[in-house]
Image (cartoon, rainbow, N blue to C red):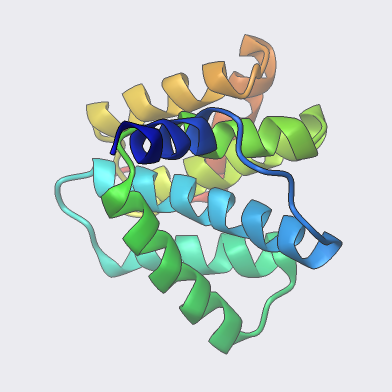
Length: 156
């Protein structure tokens, strides 16, 4: 029994490398989708605009079809509900993405946070936490936030 717990724990700390480029790409898509959904879930009043921002960001980032995005959002929702923190997902992005690509993920997350025209304190807290885990410099974090804010709807 302890061996199984140890294997489970080790898989979160040091996950096995992806077997193929397609598996790596899928893991990155899932990690990004989970972070976007986590921002959406941080707002106690989830609305259609936030959900649409998640879908739009995934479609733009990964050039996916509507069916692929729908399946990805479903899997990411399940993974987000089962996850106890975001470190597992940010670690995947740190291994695979350069700074510019990680800043783009943060900007997409800000777009989700601002999609409903207001920024909840829990969304802002999660954003800062994820940016720290992705080793995003503060200036890049703020620039991404401002770009997303200026591109979004007027504040409510």
